[in-house]
Image 1 (cartoon, rainbow, N blue to C red):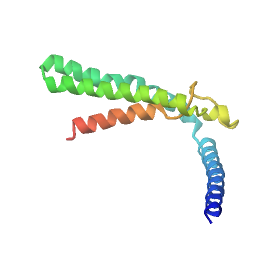
Image 2: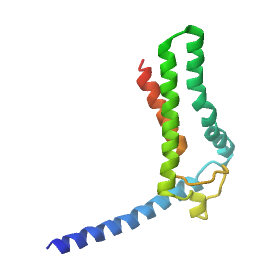
Image 3: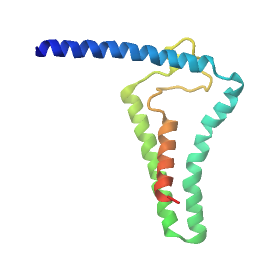
Image 4: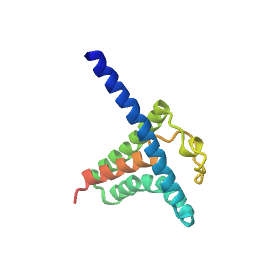
Length: 142
């Protein structure tokens, strides 16, 4: 009975894995093929703006601390910068563990629009942006 149950679970897992990958690829294909190509340059700019926005907020808080001598803003700027650095480093380490190729390397129907390289998962943009948003919402709830 136990062997039968284990085999059944294994077969269910294999079947689910194969179907979910197919759904994943179909979803990627539908998004990619239906995209507005006129927005490609705007999306590249938006994606690259993370390298400007992420350091600007903690630096601005630090400058505000220097002008107004508010220790709370100094500690907040250090905490925000720390969360961004920790999340970015964690993302780079996890990329080396998961080693998930970028879609344009895996699927022929996807082209490399943004000039990205390296592994794709987890997204460093998403990870660091979420760390910034979380830090800001916890430190400045109003």
